[in-house]
Length: 258
Image (spheres, rainbow, N blue to C red):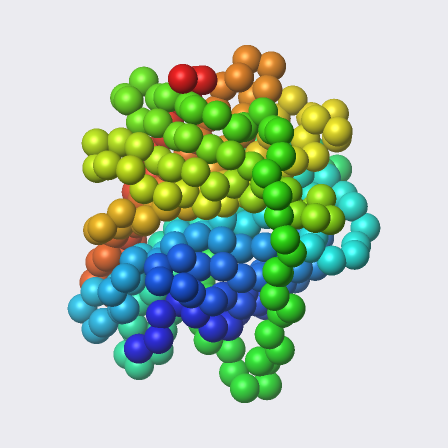
């Protein structure tokens, strides 16, 4: 069966168009809730495709700053992490993801500042819905950002991060490495490069990485006043289709500058 590449639709009728190179995932999310528009996606899938007895883990990050022209609102400062797996249910591929939405600021009439939890179920859309969102291919270059540098958690987990901005200044892409007892793995994701200009004390971010047996999504905020990086960590490993209720484990890490 196919990996996560292709078009997916969830119960809110949002569309996600993904491409895969090796185990790295990128693409565009077209939202139908909150602020409508198109948004960048990046992340990882585990290398083995889903089978009748075992799912294929997937970890993704979304930057909620619209890649096209649109009317700015507080959600443009937010980020999301999604983590779960593709399971074969009968002959159908079903992508079930736990979703953490990091709202780094209040959005009057929609949500107060905080992290919001949801479960999203994606399926391949029917032929009448195969309008693929436009891909995000903007060139990015490295920029100075408070997130850049080395971060260490009390358990010894480390992050070495740097930030790039697209030419249009819309998306803040994050690259770097996660270092822990399992070794060093590459991370990709997004952060809010407009946090300071927006007068916020919290800078949202969402990261993804892949290990040999599982994937991880890390999301939360950089608290700029005390330089603390507080992240929720979702870890997804393959399970049988009937055991997807234990596919994703949630933990937390707090990092300080190394």
